Amino acid sequence: MFVLAMIAFFLFGVKYETTIYLGMSSPTSDGYSIDAEVKIDGEVITKDSINNNPYKYKTIKKELGIGFRKVEILSVRAGVYSTRALFILPNQYILMEFYPRLRSEGEEPEFDIVNRFNPFRYE
Image (cartoon, rainbow, N blue to C red; front, side, top):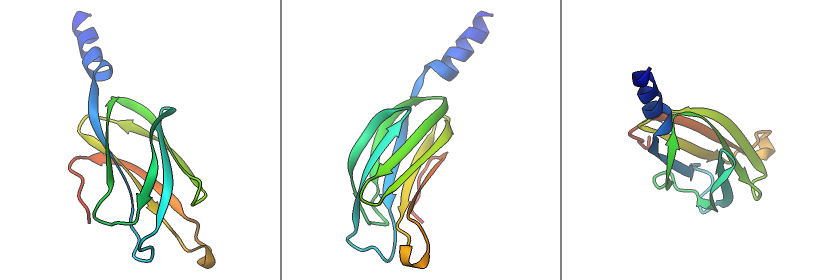
C-alpha cells in the first residue's frame, strides 16, 4: 500500500516545468499585433500582446502537475475566445497559435491550443 501511495504522489503530487508558446503566424499579417490573456485552471498566466512573427513565439514557463488542465485564451481586439481541456504529462509543451483568418472570405479568426512532447520546432 505504501508503494502505491508513493507512486501516486510522484505521478500526481509533483509539478513539472511546462513551457507555453504563444504566437501568431500568418503571411498576410505583417506588423499585426493583438492582445492575449491566457488562463490555466482559472489562473491568469499572462496578459500581454503578441506580434506576428513565425520564428519568435512568446515563451512562458509554468509548473504544472500531471492531469487535466483547462486552458483558456481571450483576445478582445481580435474578438476571439478559445478554451480546451488538455491532459498534461512531463516533458510536454503547450502551443497556442493565433490564425487571423479573413472575415471577408467567411473565415473567422481563431486560436489553436495543442500540447505535444518536447522539443518544440518551428516548421
